[in-house]
Image 1 (spheres, rainbow, N blue to C red):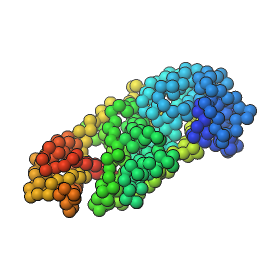
Image 2: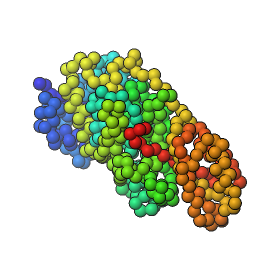
Image 3: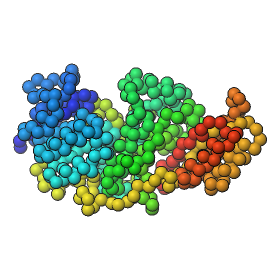
Image 4: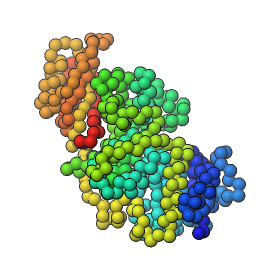
Length: 438
């Protein structure tokens, strides 16, 4: 069979890894695909010294690849929103299949891209967009196809997990570990997307769309970062039997779908609680299979390239198949007619337990007033720790609540923070058991 000719746009970390895996493992890849997969053209701004492009057409113009009649599949690895969107839509318009690792592109513009691809009868594959080399998209879309997915929860940003792991293991402050992560290349000079949950929300949006058959709705995802977490919070969570992780969580409820990213206390015995460093892991609950876990390298040159090349294998196998018989982009057939209209729930309507930390003046009656406010909002206390007074006679108080609605908790926090005897903002972290009953 004639080769599948690939144009790679971007020769950075992932692009370089993809280039090298394709050339190094060309024989095995051809045997698996049933035909050779060859690199026809590469577009890059600066040459990756680890890639030997001798004998391969190169250009600095990515749109030259998108319009090249000799290219069958465009591999988009430039990242970002606007240029990537234009590049992918141009490639689709010219009848090319697309493979991308760009989670932001899919989360924000995926609905438009998939519609254009459907109309042209081409494939858009994006396994590498979520959790690097972990094949979680294929697992959700195909392996778990018999299941009604109940919830998805995951550590889907390695930078945040690295920071929280070292805060716990070494008792260090957030700012200190972040600086180390930046020095090691795990965090960008501007770490906002990682530590504030935006990167994880992109990925969770994609996972939820595949799990429940709903449109991509990144704008409705709730995001909260980890920058306010202190070494004391990590220590107190440990004392209470929990570990703090920055999770993306999506659940199916009677009222709709939850779609949220935030710091979360998880019981120590849960598998997700024991995922450390820069690793990623996603837990999925299906009604037939029960709980499953997908663990591995969530980033890096060759782990991510592994997913990119796996997508190229799928394209090579399916390229001659009528597009109506291919695996749908987001798991469910159709673009408009078969998507679910399950609403994304507002954050104030979700129900969970909470960890609260506040500083109160060391005088009689303060704790009683706090407890009264919680009781008036229908919030019951499961555990309480009152520590010795700090400087200025402020007493750290740690509370663990039973499950309650976010709306009630927000009102309780507002009232507690308005007390004259409470100093500074109250710290709130949500608690999830993530067991088989949730």
